[in-house]
Length: 399
Image 1 (tube, rainbow, N blue to C red):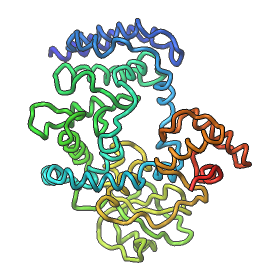
Image 2: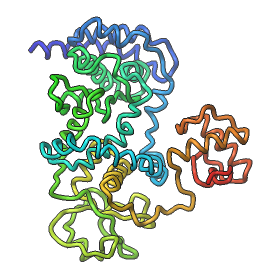
Image 3: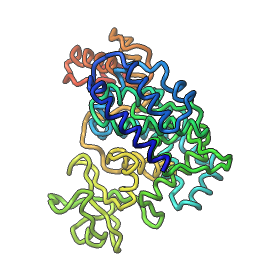
């Protein structure tokens, strides 16, 4: 009852502040909006000192607003996305972490029934095994999305309040909420609402700390995937060979048994047959000219972590490779493939060396790097795209 009243007060306060927050997208001073958010947080049970500590100093962040309208997994070509996320270094580091955390991963798999390699792959994709958790102090990022954002302000306001409630309970120190522009935090990047419903205390210290505890982070991810429908009784899917000129059912809403897919002319990529009643759906993320996959409902569980087919395939492929499996056999339909993280760093060095100043090489492709790439492409007669691709890398001397 008390919590319900608090939520009502928060919603009323937020509603009365919408006119102030409607000044979306401009670099206006957000101090008054942040002051209102502090009051709303305290009304929702956040300790006043925590609200002050987590919101003081929040200023307009153009990068947060820009990122909120452009997500890479939805706009990046899949061969660029996969080259960056599933590179040799991430595979090598994954195998090392598989050995290092074998006991923990074994216990997690036994308790939650989720393949340890899949849990490890989520960790690798989300934070590079805990080595990179994001560029943003998430309370300030969320404050920007509430005060200067253009959409879903009520949703982000709720996530901000939940963030401060988590800190108030003592599960995660206030200073440790570092993560994505959208408010996800921790080694496997949970949104605060997801944390509240699915985070677990696996190391038994009385706190659900997804930032500083690897066991808590990995077990929480397994719990998420279990609740999303993952079952170790089935694989995530198979790379397959489609019959020429196939024009039948496809997409994640069209499930059929493997036996039915076999009757339609599909085989495993190595030529092996398909059989049985396991349901699967056909996806061709780069069109009919690229790889084809028959994916089970386990793949849908992967996509629930991030609603992107590219993301789901990155998790699936990395899990296969860290467990000693094979890469996808069918090449992506491009003669200008993407670059690994190491190659992106080298590309930035080459751009600087050739007079296209893009700043300190860090492998992150932001506006300065894209502008440098465009100038290099124009100088060398390449199509001007701003894309970190093999063609511009090689023309500048990359090998």
